[in-house]
Length: 208
Image (cartoon, rainbow, N blue to C red; front, side, top):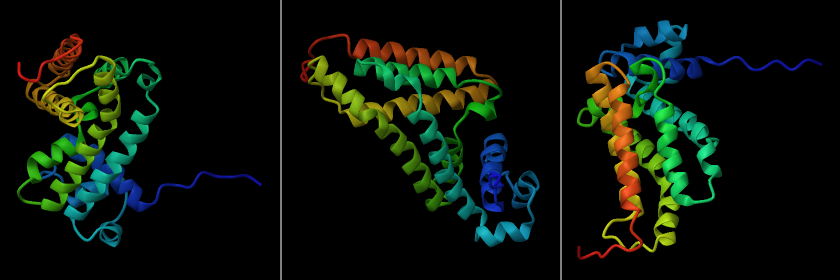
């Protein structure tokens, strides 16, 4: 008996189309008709799976989290023995992903939240969960690196993990403004140097 891989259903096709079209055109400029055309499904199929374009936006953010979560879970930086090397390896991995055109390496949820933070609270919250959830995957390694180097700083592992995302999202904005990945790579290099300096001292006095 031969096993055949299941073909993607209309919902999966629409979510995959959303990742492509929204990163290329932005959320506001993306239409339901264009999503259907890209996915190769009917408008009736769209509204069978999603009540509205915003409902698809929320689902697309969750889909993005699943796809990127699997990618980062298998990434090689987890293999480093030193937790700081794992954190620096994560940043290097982000730089290595700057391949192809701007829509191919920029962040879906970062793109959507810039446009919808006021107009669609549901999408905003879904994007926040995605960004914060991804940042949280760095916290254990940051905390371990702090312990190893006996750091007692006035900042937390959580705040530093979120700062890495702030730099990355800002780097994507600059890449969009400049039309290429070079400026984003420079920003990531600065982040690497910042992290190396931050962890270079054995102790940090919170009062300094």
